[in-house]
Image (tube, rainbow, N blue to C red; front, side, top):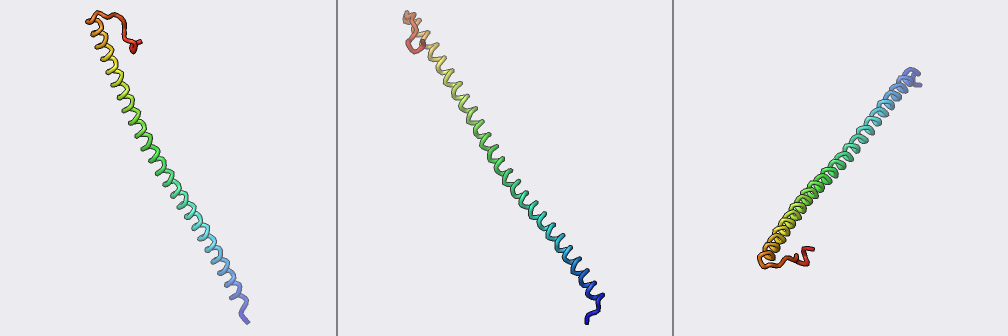
Length: 100
């Protein structure tokens, strides 16, 4: 025959222990959720860094393309000017079919 107060104290202790375990479980879940969220944010950051790098490379390529087009236009202008001078020196006034 166990005295009644021991059982009551035991039940209280069990209840307190269950509540503590429950709080610890909730805290652990919060830590895990935060950890997962942090891992997702890191993945997002890596992806954004990659996209930024691709965008920088695209912009550099576009600048190079624009510079190349500019050089082609300058060369074309020089050729047309040269052709015009040669035609004038040769006494030909009509422009070339390409210049039209």
